[in-house]
Image (cartoon, rainbow, N blue to C red; front, side, top):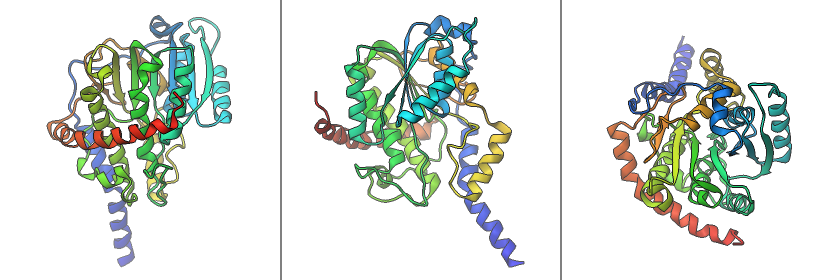
Length: 350
């Protein structure tokens, strides 16, 4: 019957971008210098982080919370940043409840800072708050993000798609000002993309600049994922602290498939597919936190440039086509971000 044909065509159209993305991810080139990063036990992690200060922006759920748990168990002084006091209190209670107080675990301390990197104004307020604190951080893990909703595109107060604003603009401002609240030789993990061989033809400058609304879920995902990588490439080209190559060690990682409901609500087909994939290959917040913490302190990372590590712990590099695409768009995005950065002065009381 014809209705079965239409259903089959509809399903094929709906899942094609997802299948395409997964195929490209599978063929991402390996970084032989990094290789495979081993998972560290709590006892091993303690030798790297005990007594040190760690900042988790987006630490109340998902990857951020899992990483906060691993670092707290290993004796770090953890600060988690989230949008609401309620979510912060809930995260801290969960982390403390899940952390044994007997060896090899010797929990550190944990506190919450209310903050949001969804707009220029809120991001600058967070940066100002962190900079005014006497605490200086040795580690930072930035995992704050929001999933794009193509059924009802949401723009922030700056006129930008909210998912792009958090993944690219907010993180850009945090990294540009990281020297104000982080120690020299500090380590930064950017949780979002890991040098995958992404379908770059879905990147859209008009979505990035807020000139048009999102019309498809995957074009939005690819635009903010590649935009994030273009932004980081720009840091190592234009920012004095990153370009010096001995100030920060930075690695971009992939969150993997988490057993959470953070990505739900994108339509029946997507939710069904994600549920199936997570049930087969999903990891818990605790498991992904161990991986992210192990990557954070690894001696296998590049010390003089940006590293990429995928959700399985393998080092990755851009393929030639993706690298060329990033270079072609780097100047355009940097000019856009620099213009937004200049406008951020109005929100600062410095």
